[in-house]
Amino acid sequence: MVERVLEDGGFGALKHYVIEVTGLEYYVDREKDLAAAVVRALDGGEWKSAVSYLAGLRQPGGMAMDRLAEELTIGETFFFRHTEMFTALREHVFPEVHARKEKERSIRIWSAGCSVGAEPYSLSILLRSELAHLFLGWRIEIVGTDINRRFLKMAREGVFEPWALRGLSEEVKGRSFEKRGKRWGLQKRFMEGVRFQQHNLVRDAFPSLGNELFGFDLIICRNVMIYFGRENVQRLADQFHQTLLPGGWLAVGHAEPHQEIFKEFETVMTPGATLYHRRSAGGRVRKSAVALCEAWKPVVLPKREVEKVEVLPVQEMLLLPPLPRREVEVKGGMEEWTELRVLADAGRFAEASEACKRLLALRHFDSPGLYFMHALLLQQSGKVGEAHEALKRTLYLDRELALVHYHLGLVLQKLERGAEAKRAWRNALLLVEGLAEDEAIRYGDGLTAGDLRCLIDQQAGRVI
Image (cartoon, rainbow, N blue to C red; front, side, top):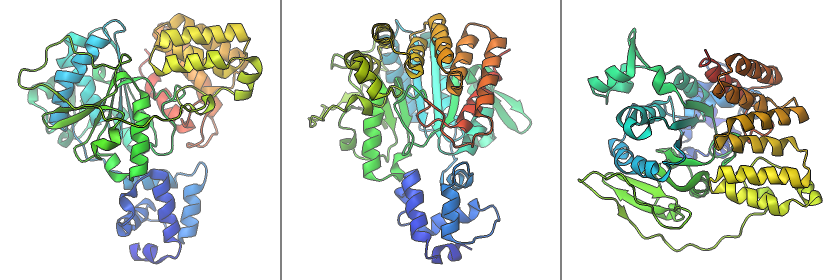
């Protein structure tokens, strides 16, 4: 059947669409591999024509694109893969984050292209076990994203084949996993604070408060961008820079593009791994208060001179959920809005929440989006009680916002009001009932109904 697919006159348009949606330019000159993936994605179904198959890929709510993505992506991974990277994280990055954020006592990590979850769970084991002396009592948030929904389902289960644990010592395996027949289940304590959501790096928005992809201390995106074209890679590098907090770190794979792509970062060379550092607000690298391993010291390359870029208009800035420009202009809130954006972009969430509060009070805004933004900023500032009130105010203005009900559940969970949290999540599920899996939800910046259902399932199972 592969030959039939290749010989179809519409295959060129099909290939163009798949590459455009996924960013996988790897398949530009690998048409036979792409056709084979299409055949596998058909699950034994009949091949009619490229035109009809492409129509299925484009269909809202259809599962054809998800099935094809499953065949185009690779799930082979294992715990603590890339030893040199984890050494660099253990001995340099995490001690530096600890020293820089000792007052806030929170760390946020994004594993982009996480496959079946071995990488984010490895980070959780490292932080909660070997580095527990640094991060005990900290709020640890690890987000794993992937385009492949089947991989994410496996990741949420936290159960792995022995092959995925092949790099672990018996000691680490014994204290981190439990035997479940022929497989191994990760202990619940290492699953705490780890969540997974579907995200397409090429098509979906980030940074964004709406889908909670913002303000990270560390982003890991290994062996993903090697499949993308230069234009997409450059855009991703710029977006990763925006998505990190000042002082944050980016780790990519050995075979990822040249350092010129990451010119906005400071390049830090370590044995076997290259890291990229977003400068702190003061423009200088902050030294860790925790001594590095005596065996090596990171080599910091000078930051390249880069051209100045034009500042984006307010309505095009990515971090904050959209607020209608007309409403801001009519009510005269552009100055406060700009201040709010700058503070949030710098990771100064407490100050940003105060700026948002002033904007609400001084300009008499009644936008649910702005109240929701205020609630999210309060959450990130650790002001759970105030976030609860802001979320209730949001729902008073618009009770049909499923994502707001979801966040209300998160806040109620932190307030140890488990029954109310579950009720909030049930309300969110009712609001997305009947929506297609891939239908975007309001204020989610690309988060879909299917993603929200998965997030709720993941959280609800942790409420006693």
